[in-house]
Amino acid sequence: MNTLYDKLHGLDPEFYTEDRVTPMLATVERIKKLKRERNAVVLAHNYQRPEIFEVADFLGDSLGLSLKAAEVKDADVIVFCGVHFMAETAKIVNPEKVVLLPNLAAGCSLADMATGPEVAKRVAELRKTYPDLQVVTYVNTTAEVKAHSDACCTSSNAVSVVRALESQHILFIPDQNLARHVALHVPEKTIIAWDGYCYVHHQITPETVMTMRRQIPGIKILVHPECRDDVVALADAALSTSGMVEYAQASKATDFLAVTECGLSDLLQISVPDKTFYRACKICRFMKAISLDDVEQSLLQNRFQIEVDEPVRSRARMALNRMFELTGETRDNLSLPDSVANE
Ligand code: SF4
Image 1: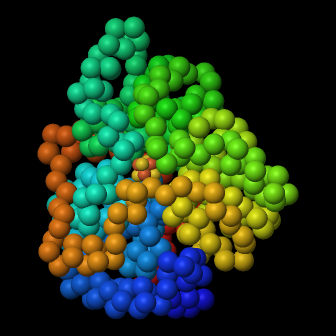
Image 2: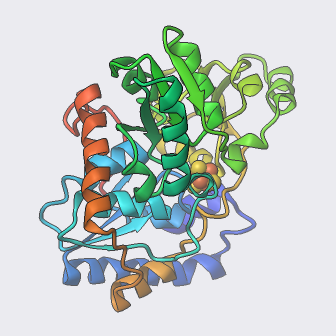
């Protein structure tokens, strides 16, 4: 499959008709020209619409993109095709660059479940009982919440970050399912979970997994750790989005079910075309908010610029740096398929 039409039509023949894809081809070419004119790079999360991958310089999960954002030294503009907290992270590590989020509807209901004042209040209460309490925030949080934390983490390094911290008591914000996943793997510590959840992963039920297991013997079930624990318990592996791509590429199995957001199923099928990926995924309305037209207008009109106040930015930056120090992660030692150059 070589052309954009073949790729997209192969994913969803009913939606990606020739009438829809032909104008996209022209938009892709205009965006590539604008990127050169503005010295811009496009970072795209694995859950984006597949046509967005065509203009992306780098694809990845939150961790891969956080690291990439810290290294785009030569670009003047970063267009972030993901959701708001990710674009904020790009701004936190690139304060001198213009960071654009092409559509402000690309928020995140999980990130919105914790605010800075709420976290400050809860931490003050808990420290009366646990003076050694440290705060770990999943990157799916606002810059303001990151600024209240001792270290950030992603779904792929949450266990390592919590294990490496010196404190016995950890307040884990904001995802309760990921907190449970961490508690299971770090039983020597007390994990106090915030009560947030991702509406996309939380609605996936054990019945979905069991039905696929019954229907396709030998199928490998890969779930995201933001899923409920009764779903995680039924899976072959609980992995971040890039971890799932790696797993599918390395596995001898031919049939997979990726229990996560639908964008990953699309990416898996594109990245590993010789294997079969069954879809029992859910769509995140926030992740699908950005269109190719939004990306073009973003570059033409410099919209929508992400700003983070300096005191918040520098505290949030410290929490992100702590994550990298604790895990020793850099671009060089990541084996993530998140550097898929399209040009
Ligand atoms: S999939 Fe969940 S965590 Fe990710 S952006 Fe959507 S609502 Fe937020």
